[in-house]
Length: 237
Image (cartoon, rainbow, N blue to C red; front, side):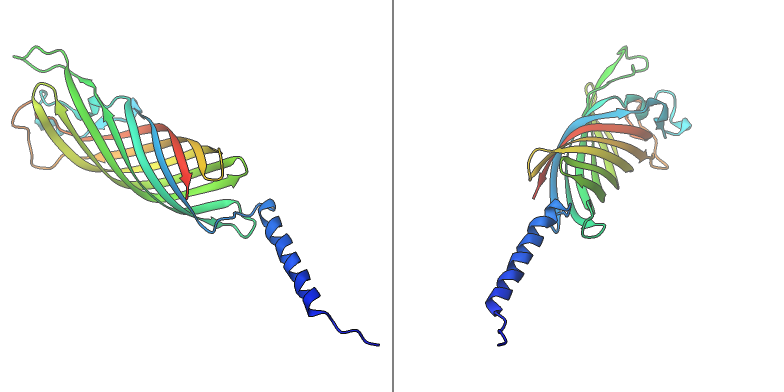
């Protein structure tokens, strides 16, 4: 006597096998999300590499014109970045790659060199800020405990300020290139706290054909290498 196959039993077996595969996939190291949106505020400090800071004010501007590069000092850094990451490297890959955008703001309050005669100020106080708008990419290697990431970005940087004794001063819009790394520790399925380190090259040139009407006209002409150190708070959406 020939026994007929039980379609119900076969279907149950297939469902059970599918369940085992789905349960085993994360254990095998697959990234569960098809994409990961990272919402990451961060706080830290911008540290100029003094030996690589140079002013771009032309020599014919005169000795009494203050050079902005002399005012670059360690400063407070705050920002907000957003990345949209996708898994790469095959089904068992543990890497995420995708575009990143962000806004960083550097604010500092340096004492700048003294003014020329007939004024007798040894130093003047400057409230200044620089805003960077970044577009680039982020690559993250993911482990059970967190991630190691690298990122690359560029964009415009605007510089402006307010001189204590003489009011608003001239600003400038330049460009920057940023290369960064990070080490993050996962504190849950949706939150990662990261140590972020970035090297930032900035480029600001003086407008050709201009000259300060007075010595106190402050010119933001500089090129610099800076290092950003910060703590990022990554929310995975």
